[in-house]
Amino acid sequence: MSDVVDTARGAGPDGESHRPALLRLWDRRAAFKPFAVAGVGAIVAGGVLASAIAAPAPTRHGVWAVAYLVLVLGVGQLVIGAGLTLLAAEPPTPRRAAIAAAAYNVSGVAIVLGVVTDHVVVFDVGSALLFVMLAAALYGVRRSTQRGWTLWAYRLFIAALIVSIPIGALITTAGRG
Image (tube, rainbow, N blue to C red; front, side):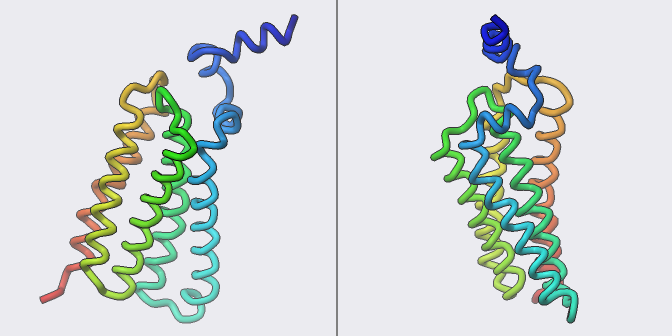
């Protein structure tokens, strides 16, 4: 009997929203996995870069790359993946999630390479792709069944990343002739 009650409680948008977010994320792990694997990989890569290169001989580009890898490609990707998986009316299919995560990572790699190698065009292409991906992430939660602070926090997080794109472009190209 309790199995029937637990199944009924977990079914549908009302019952599901009362379950802890980590359990709902686990249930939808196929959609979250591409973001999680790449996000954790970026955080580890940032740590390796910090310990191997930036710590012994810190440079402006090296320190920036560590911060970008950890915060934007790592933590940012985890937040975006969890948001799309938990807040969208329909979570993305594993294929769509893999495409979105790939687009996010390609944009991040282009941005890092563009900054570190001083190739503004590569940075600009990465920034444009990042903008498109972030806009798609916002669009993905337009009909969210969730309401309240989590949805607003997710949208605010995406908006902050979007606003940081032109700021990063200005900082990157400042002082160039």
